[in-house]
Every structure is written in C-alpha cells, then in structure tokens.
Image (cartoon, helix red, strand yellow):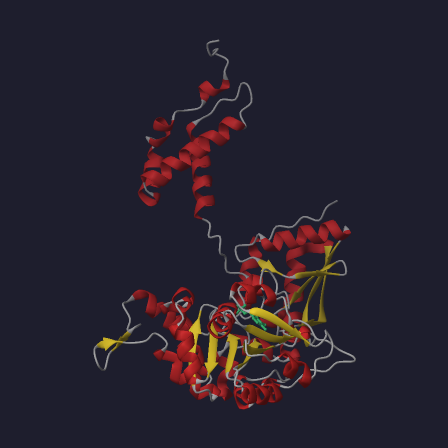
Length: 467
Ligand SMILES: *Cc1c(COP(=O)(O)O)cnc(C)c1O
C-alpha cells in the first residue's frame, strides 16, 4: 500500500535537508562531517520512534535533537569523580590518586619521544627498567628489580619463570582470591606450575613445608593474606624460617606482599604493614608488590630480589607481554623519588595525605559542608556531620579502620529516597560516590581534597524528595 498523506513520517526532514541547516553547518565545523551525519541519523531515528500521528516537526526540534546526540557521544566515560566511599584505595575507582610530580612526569613522557630503551651516555640501546632499578634497590635494599603491568602479572611471571613444570609450595591458609579472576590456584595453573598445598586452613607448620619438598619443587611461595585474616587457633611459618628452609633445599623463596609499602605506616598513625625492606631483610629471594596500592603510584607490579633470579625473569618471553609502558614508568620513577624524603611524603603523595589526615581536620570540614549541603537539599533531607570509619582498601590492613568524619544524609521517604539521592549525586558533573549504610547516604570526607570544586559541583544538584 502506498504511503498515505497522513503518515507522520512524511513530516520528518531528510538527512540532507538537516545537514544543510545553517546551525548544523556550524556544528559540523566543530564535530566533523562524519560525526555530525551520524548524529543527524541517530536524531532522526529517535524522533521517528517517538512520533505520534499528527506531529509536525520543525527544523529547530531536529537540530536540538542532533545537538543532544552529539553531547551524549562527547561525554567522557572514564570520569573523574569524588571518592567519598571511605575506602582510600578503591579498586573500582582506580586505586591510588597520583602525586603532581608523577602526573607531570607521565605527561612529559606522553608528549615527546623519550629515552625509554636508549642509553644517552653510550648512544646504544638501553633497558627500560634501568630508569627505576637503582631507585627501587635504594629504597628496598634489594639487589635487583624489574617492573611489569601489575602485581598479578608479577606473580604470574615469577611462577612461570621459576616453577613451570614444577611444584610451587603454598600454605592452604594463603590460597587467596583477590576479587574478580585473581585466584592463586588458577594463576598458578596458567603459569604452568603445579600447586602443592601444605598445612591446613588455619595452621601450617615448618615441617609441612619441609615434608613437601621434592626434587621437582620449583619454589616456596608466601602470599600476604591481604583481604582477610585468619584468627583464633592459628599458626603460620615466618618468612625468615621459610627463607632458611628454601636456602637449605636450594629452591627460591618468593614472598608476594600484595600491597607492600616502602615506609613504616606507623609514622602516619596507622598500624604497621610489612615493608618491602623488611621482606628483603627476612631473606626472600624474590618479592612482588603493587604500584597502585599503598605505594601510591600508577598500576604496576614490582619484582625485587636476587640478581640472578631477576635476570631469569627478564629472559622469560612473557616479560615482553607484561612489560610497562613509558607513561607509567615515568610516573613510577617520579613517585618513587618522593620516598627519598619520607618527612614530606604525607604532603606530596595523595595516598599518604589521605591516610594521614587528622580526624579533627576532617570533622571541621564535615561541619562546614553539612550546612552547605542542608541548604542545597532543602528541608526534606536531614544532613548531619557524624563520625565514621575509613579503610585503606586494596587489601592493606583488611580489618583495620581509621577513625574519620563524614556527612550523613537521610531523605524523607526511606530506602527508595536514599537510592534516588545517591543517584542524584552520581549524575553530577563530578559524580560524588558515597556509601549507603543504615538507611542513609554517607560521604566519608577523608579523601575530599578539593572542597571548592565540591561546593561548585553542588550547584548542579537536582533532588526532589518523593511526596
Ligand atoms: C592485590 C594483590 C595482588 C594483585 O595485585 P594487582 O596489582 O592488583 O595486580 C596479588 N597478590 C596479593 C597478595 C595482593 O594483595
């Protein structure tokens, strides 16, 4: 049947006609022909879907819709946001926020050609690890070091290098899963190592390790139980004892520290996590740890320890697939340099700055912002400044919390209203991410650096409490 004169589609202009509109020509100068044409097609398709009989389209409606489509496509998906969850190193929110020094270094490395694998002194080919090797050794006391994509890659590479086709001996109490797909037994299988579990979930003794040693033993692995703690009737074998046993049996001892820190956290009022230097002193042959956990740098996996073993790791063809890029290498170097001056670490390294903030300072901020928020949200939301508890996150001191202060918001209308309020904050130009607890939306202010931006951002807040 032929289209009748009543068909509403007839009122929609053609793509060509829209593209000839003066406003659209201006848009095209900014977005380019291909992108603008695509947006016009999308806009027309959307309008066609919502068309009702008798609707008459004018060009203004169509142009507005084109603009809306372009704006939506331009939106950055990887958005900077306020992490007010109370978890300082939040894996889903990108873990460590980098120091300005690291940001500058990464930016410079992006902008120009760099001496990544080029030795400026000799004019010959260099090693990409050379830029940080000496620095890592200086800060950890290790003999040698290498860097890969992340700590999961570090563990995979070490297992594959030292234990492919052999056994890796691990305590049953340390067969960890660290969120997502990182499960120690599975990583081990992919690395080609056979898992030799020893001991029981809660207790492992020196003789368990000793009894497990056979000619096919590739290494002894100790894994820091980053995200849980076994308490009660427990026993584990110390790194020092494992190092001794490994030396006697002539197999390498590998210590996966997970977070691994370069400074004693007690200087920031936190409980002590094992430092990399201590792990070196305890006699581990290789130690692995992350760059973007407590260290406060970019995503990276550090492998430090014995020179001959690092050389073996670097000869493994997998190293090439797991290596670091120039941007993160530059950021790593700049971050590590900050550790040469531990006294100023809490000012210069955001992770330490957040962790070291005093409750009193955070409380003052909460009191200031509670009244600002109350004004913004109107009478339907009760806003209080109240104590709360932060955690480090990313598997450091899993059971420890740090006293903090925050904003507690209780909208009239209960659970649904809390969800709606949380969504309203998430849709701000700088999304604000808090946590929902006991029928309230809570913003832990420990990681709120830029109070000015936070206040400006609130101007866009739209929240109507349900009637
Ligand atoms: C976090 C962690 C890993 C994985 O490190 P990523 O840097 O996230 O790849 C491995 N082992 C332990 C013990 C960890 O805590």
